[in-house]
Image (cartoon, rainbow, N blue to C red; front, side):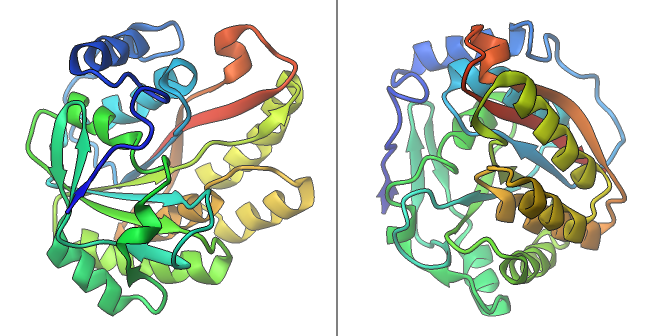
Length: 276
């Protein structure tokens, strides 16, 4: 099947040339990386990347993809939240290609079958992926900033509790250790708070991510009532990356929609983090 784009023309431009220009604009933006990173021997196991409209979160997202651009992963394992509440608690898909204005990207069906077997929670269910943007918005960035052919393993989470994150993270690491893979946690941070408060909230949560302390991460979420939408995806990625040998997270960039637009009354936070 072809998974047609559902937010092209909304979250990002729906035409190829306009989309390419938009990604370049994000890259060169004052909140973007500005220049291509030099090739590095540093092993990056995964990244956290936002998934809002490119005009707001694209510059921050480019930091994550710039960091991994020289690794040429053959597989991008993208984990994100299910905003619409449709389908299974955790789902992947098989026999599919995801379409964007930049072309088609194939799902690694073998890896999808394997993760459904290894996980107690992940099921194969195309319908779970039918409406959401959290995975889709990552794909044009990957297509644009990776120079090699790659496949994807999409995993969308309706359940985001610690038990689910552990199950998914452990299963993902079993897949990733056999391939040149990158894990992408698709999540925004604080939603619809005043700008300085969002910065304060997200700083506390990001500290636990940089320490790769999953228990403290959930504790901070709960105690501070932080509204990061893809918290389970972040936790699963931390667990998987730790299993693979990562020892820390590194903050590449943080900005809010208010920092970008100047409208600071009600903002959403965006963070780019790598696990090394």
